[in-house]
Image (cartoon, rainbow, N blue to C red; front, side, top):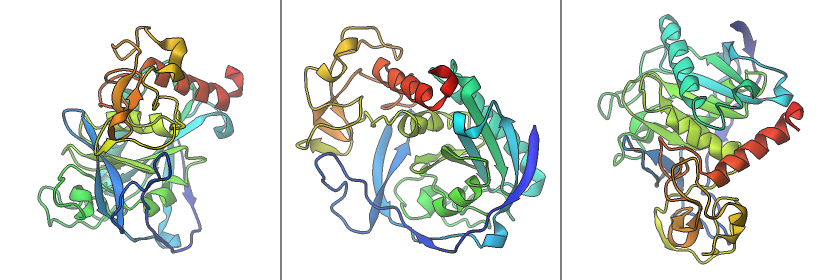
Length: 321
């Protein structure tokens, strides 16, 4: 492993996530002051929930310093996908455990196709963020506070007291520390906890010591690498917008968007067709198969999603063209 210590000059700014637009220009939430966060359940189901927007202060410039460890380095960053792990709630004495958690999550991710076949085109970085105290906020109970570098906590840092497993992070700080790596195509924040939890977003989160939580990174890289839409159908009823741009969802009930694959066996165990319910709508949008990783954790990508991922790999890595 190669380690080097970097510091990054940053400005102290406030940061907030806004509601994402849906096809047709509709706002994802009619309520002001909320953001929608992906929630991952222990049974693998995925949903979205609104939480109050957090105004996040950046870390002071002098605080953004950490060792960066190359867990896997296979080539120049401009010709690879760079996956960057940042840790929260790990003291200096617990960095060994943090490294084990990073390796475990990368091992789980790279066992899923097409990551398995394209593993050698990834750089994986571990940023050794050191916290003053061990653990994360609201663990084991709501109201438990810990002094950590990235402010991770269950119940989405106390903003959503209905969803215990929603493990949120100060995304501004996570991005600051992630930027210490040579490049960061996707940042994953690991919390020092064995309690199941995670969240999706610009920075994905997962419980470092929980064996199930690595699937969250698989799903999130489907978004960031393949540009794939979510295929679950919560929380809206009927879609009435324009045709989505993502390759794995359509408003056409014939599934003509992926006509080349119709009727073919899919890696996720299904057969490619047009299954109603996708991109947060129960009706009016269709997905290629019944149940892929973009709908439920622990699954494989369907044939349409896998092709999109491979195309993204080939576009990024010159030697694959």
